[in-house]
Length: 156
Image 1: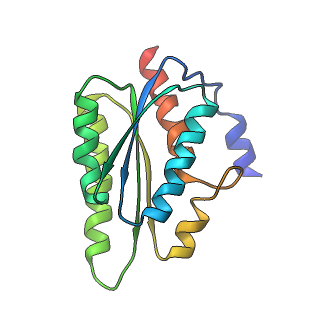
Image 2 (image 1 turned 135 degrees about the vertical axis):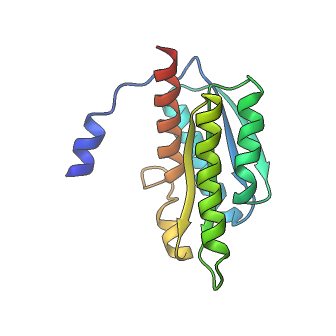
Image 3 (image 1 turned 60 degrees about the vertical axis):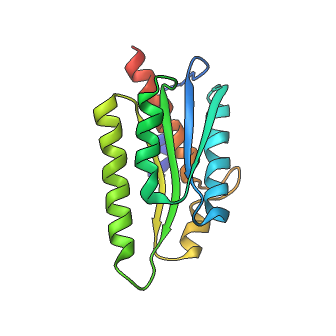
């Protein structure tokens, strides 16, 4: 019920004037493809017509690509999507921390909002649950809505 209340307070968004980009990692591509599809659905539902796609090797590379896209002046918002699944080493902590920090730096230093659609999960089952098809929970779709909302905030 709390989630319904939160959704009710979301403003009506018209992204038809926006140009956006999706920066997606290729690592864990089955999950990331689902997140990209979710972001595309989210943008389409908000009327966004101009979507550029950028592909990078992994989540660690997302902030750099997002920075280059933001600095290009060709977009009003970005969605970053990827999936980092915990393994047996401390690599997970390093990648998730630096990816999140880097994405935050991009939006704060450029003024271009970046929706955070990077999954940081314990296992594949959690990743699947957070990247469902239309009508289900999809973090990419949620990140697209957040990016549009913030881009419109900047335009007012």
